[in-house]
Image 1: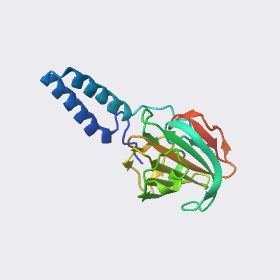
Image 2: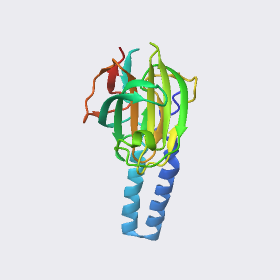
Image 3: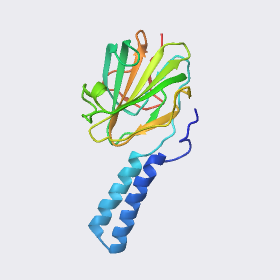
Image 4: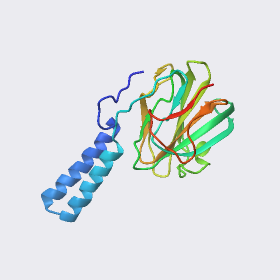
Length: 216
């Protein structure tokens, strides 16, 4: 698995949006529309900020599970995961607002066994129903130790486009970028029972940098 976004200040998927915003700003300047210029410039800044692609200092360790996205931890629940793991798991949900980095990162070392996209609704991503009912994309990762970790990109009320750059049988490299969700979203990570969780509800986390837990 190659980290396709290394050294690029913005996600490639965001460049057309940034270009359009810049074009509108330049047109407003050329026409001499002051208010439109200010609004377009602010829009350009927001779009560029949204698609930013910062580098991260990635902790290393065969048992570490890292946050797969930036945002706020809104739930830590032990529950039965019926679709992929088909067993009890610890779900850690991270809500990404429109001001968070939206590049998603691989949470652990291993192999990507499966990638499955599921169409669905666009409920607010911080609602419990979003876990099963919203549009989403799931990565099943078999860790070096053997247990499976499930990482799910969940679209939200505004987010309408999930991007994933990896495929089954790719090597899962901890901290590497694997996709993004446009304009607000949520990341769910399902961990094996017995994982030592290192975050709490309400914590702010950084994708590829904050340790969510350590495998048993």
